Amino acid sequence: MAAEGVFTTGNLTSYCTVEDVFKVLRGYDLAAFGGPEALAERVQELLPLARGMVDSGAGRDFRWHPGETVTLDGNGTDRALLSEAGVSLPVAVRAVRVGGGAVAAEACHVYGETGLVRLKPEASPGRFPVGVQNVAVDLDWGFEDTPVEVGMAQAKLAAAELLAELGGEGGAVQETRIGDYAVRYAEEGRYGGAVRRLCEEAAEVVRRYRVVRVAAV
Image (tube, rainbow, N blue to C red):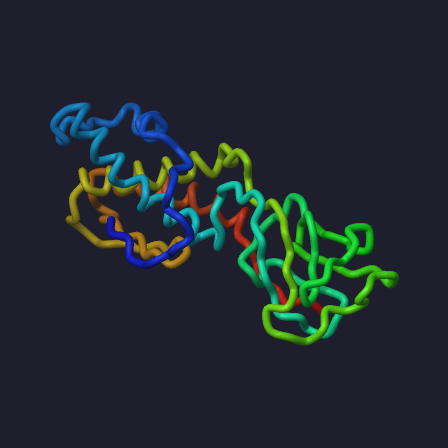
């Protein structure tokens, strides 16, 4: 199984552990990797790849982003969409500034599920004036604790990669895509069925968290 693609949203941490991958692989004959230490080393090498696949498929990462400031272009309406700055699932908006001036917290609506900030009629100013990077939002966003099923999806993808290496490349080669990555495996290889199942299960979880970028209206 080979993965192709680039996704730059942090590979700084892993959503799962080597032990989590071992749990997925329980029952498989892994002796070909030469012992527990060599196997653990290979799994550790695969974790960044598997995390990149998860992040790419979801169009976001699953880390906690406290105390960040994002800047947006004012669009002349009373609405600003935080996803335009790469924000997903904002947890708490601390402050909104327009052209350097603060907007009162009680004069804003924040819609957590869509990342939309909307000015109330009594806000001053009442609209985000057209401009370049003239709207600043201080906020916390993301996941303080990675969802368990997301960590398991990463573990399954790492396990699938390992099984594909064990199974060889003989037979018809199949491909499935997870985000920017093309995942290839030998359908008739020793573990072809298991690789396909693990990839499909992981992809289903990732799809449920995928961020759909929409424009503010």
